Image: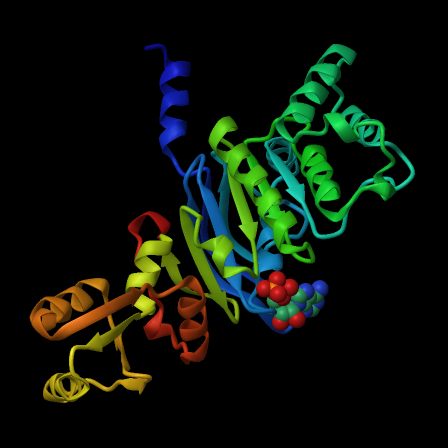
Length: 329
Ligand code: ADP
């Protein structure tokens, strides 16, 4: 293997984004308080947090739109911070912010070609790239339509097309589905997942919708400028959300007795006992033990909503910072 090839292979295994000790002060206010995380190449990475957590500040710094106060950031192996490096980084990223950057009066195709020209492509390259985004985002039917006449979901697709006209390695999306109706959200979301899978694009997004974050490969949750949890949706749910076990016993009195015997707190409505259990495994153990007395049961897995609500309720001190995934550290 020649050196160039070997380096390329090595780059593929390195995190595509590496943030260490990032701090951002706005005058006396510290909006980002020394956060560290990594993003794997080709992954779907979700950045969560309530308003004011520091998500936009972080994403704007990563996109070279805002200067950091301190800390180190590498994107695609390039250290962010110098003019030359920032320019290189900008070439390898695409950004979709909540406000569209497109011209309302131009058609979809005109808008995209206009944006593409800013990258200095040859005519041939520009046409090739237009065909690439047209296909990737299913723009065939709307290519000659004025941007202002499109539906919310169609506009989002065109915004994404604009952001990937230069075939970036990373696509940053700031709340890409906010304000869209549920069906359109699903459609835009499918498009995003398709870009990740088919083009191996790394997707970095912020979202308020927990069910969207639940399909991410990795999640980082921020609160008041700090990372309060990180990991896969599965590990976060295991650690921060309890399952709900609902049981109907053959006889109500037996059920009550079994639960009290274990000292478990429960609620009971219409003969159905509901208990919070820390994990699915514990639910399984209880079910096995009580099997002869059970008429019916249901286990409802803890959701990302539960994780988010629980983490945001807790008071977070430095000593409580939790990171469950080594890959996200
Ligand atoms: P999020 O995107 O998670 O809602 P932001 O990054 O927008 O959070 O904001 C983080 C904190 O920084 C908030 O307290 C916000 O008020 C503050 N902040 C954001 N932008 C500025 C700014 N330009 N000047 C001063 N404070 C700011």
